[in-house]
Image (cartoon, rainbow, N blue to C red; front, side, top):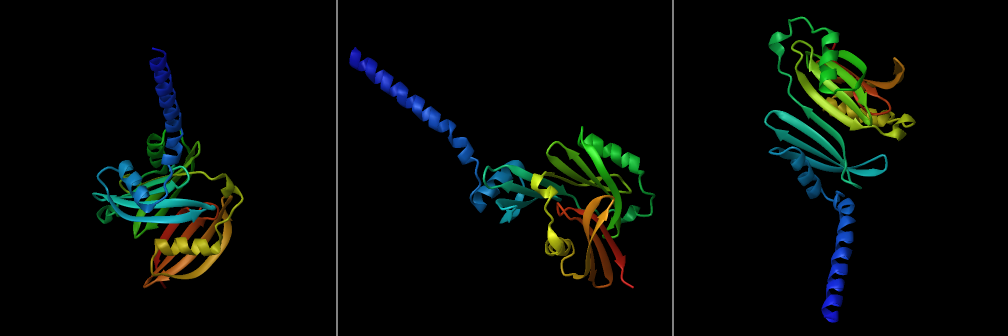
Length: 241
């Protein structure tokens, strides 16, 4: 009887030790250390989507994975932190093809604000800007809530939500600046194949920005980029003189 009793104690102790080690696994298991794991994680976030691209990059000295997916006519862009697998950016975008209603009046800014507040309840609106993107009028709304910074883009004619994005705020971004080189890269990613004519650093309504002017074919582009975060604040397209 005593041997059986000791045997039971040993088995119980082993089970307890294994359970403790299992508790320490999740944090390590959540790490994303390969393109394959980043792809799998993103597909769980957007079921049924097709992965178009997976990239590894370094951001503020930390490794991140960015995954681009497509589901029907919606494009997704997800960014994960490698160290703990945390989703630090979530974005989806719909194509704006409403050329047939461009003659209509723009929706009032107050209505767009109301839509944005309904979409992100409890968030604070920091700015609402009207701009032209590929000849179409859009409202870009910037909001903050907790540790997230939101960007919502609405069709200015129909009020349809075209883009939805949130990013985790970075405390170090208060003192950092992306620099002209990074601003140029962001602008060229927005208008591939364009030539950068001028880059200027200035402050707009208290916000540090880079204003980038580009030329492509018969069009000129003016892009305002947040100098701290790299977010595109304004995008304008016009016929070159």
